[in-house]
Amino acid sequence: MHFPSLPPTVVLQLTLVSVLQGAKWSYDGPEGQQYWHKHYPYCGGAFQSPIDIESELLRFDPSLRPVEVQNYNLAPYEQLTLGNNGHSLQLSLPSKMYISSLRHRYTAAQLHFHWGSTSQPTGSEHMVNSKQHAAELHVVHYNSDKYPNISKAVDKSDGLAVLGVFIEIGAFNPAFETFLKFINGVKYRDQKVLVPGFNIRTLLPARLDEYYRYDGSLTTPPCYPSVLWTVFRNSVTVSQKQFQSIATALYSTSAQDSAPVSLHNNYREPQPADSRVVLMSFKEGRGLHGTLTVTSPLTRKQIIQQLLVGDLADLADEGLYKLLPRGVQKLQAGRRKDLRNWQSETLTKPKQQTLSPPLWKKSQANHYAGKLGLAEDSLSYASLEQRVFHRLKQSHSEKDLVQALRDAVYPELNLKSYLDCKSDLALPTIRHILRGRPTDEALELDRSLTRALGNQKKTSAAVKPSAPLTKHGSQFSANVPRKPPSQGHPHPWLLPMEWED
Ligand SMILES: *[C@@H]1O[C@H](CO)[C@@H](O)[C@H](O)[C@H]1NC(C)=O
Ligand SMILES: [Zn+2]
Image (cartoon, rainbow, N blue to C red; front, side, top):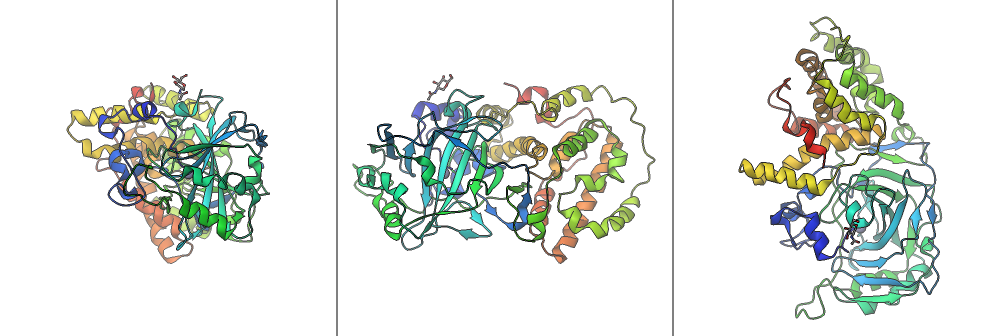
């Protein structure tokens, strides 16, 4: 995903924090991707893209319908702007094109590419089991049911939907030729040419029913986690010659620049999974993960409701497995008895009565009510960044902006994604929800959970496949609070004003 087409005024709006304005970035060197977070704190945050789509992250979701696109077949007189923005080759798309198979209408804005180099033709952003393709096409759409244009949508948690297509070197691709033949008109940064419209559908693979789906981000600064990703299983091909023309024709510098820099290897490295799972619309082989099916949204909603207002002692005991990463339960099926046994050692308290939810819970319950009712609330990243920045400034700790934003956004994103079956429930999220519950109940659940996860981490180190557990494990331990949660002193970002504009 690439989001290069913002006019300067919009960039100012997106990065209201003064230190961030207009910061240059590139793929390597002093402004390279390992430094993006310094000027664009979300790049160091949660739910980033691309990812390596490993088998261990996969869950089959039979409810995923084939992708449907509308008005992709453009006539030659419908001219498109082909441009070089210094980071990618981009083609503007008319707003009559849209995706019709998602919860909202997502209107097309542009498409662009990421690629490797002639010596190393491996420049896709997403990977599947560590395999990187030659290049990747991104068709960028925004949620036009909720936002008037892409500038407004780009920093919203439900703002964008991107279709990702792997490109490999093979047969000549006539669809690509319709715009590649104009590539010499945009050799330098900021150059643009008009090209005739064509059937954009022919850039996509034949099968639109087989794809991976996950929650992620822009893969370029400002890296907002605002993208619903669809990465098609099947790739398309371009010829060696076509690949070479993309990989060698362009410069990231402008025509006036006396030191031209070639534009290639414009891909971001894979990012941490952050307790996300990748849904797949198709069933793959007989592997354990390919056949794991997601738990229903209703079950997930009930689990969150139990955390919010239900019997926590019961969750800490019989219900503990519900909170553990899905898939782990299956691997651990034979171990549940063990788990319960050692866990019961710590259960010294009798179950508590939870007849009426305490008063404090009201606001928090309301806060989540929208999500539980699948209401359409979204996070607004630019304004959150501004608020967090100002608060940190008051306490003279600007350097913690990246971590603070990550801590602020992670439980919200994880919860939203969990309820939508695209994440496992993570410990920081559970703790976030538990902050308002009676201390002894919540503390007990926290302890049981921490020990269960620690136990699973140990077990998983010995048992294959272990990758997701290790990932979850390290993330959990990084988020262990120094103090137990206490009533009356909620975490600052739980305050009601925090998420409201
Ligand atoms: C996007 O929409 C907002 C709100 O209607 C408007 O203020 C802004 O100018 C628009 N931006 C672009 C680039 O059209
Ligand atoms: Zn991109």
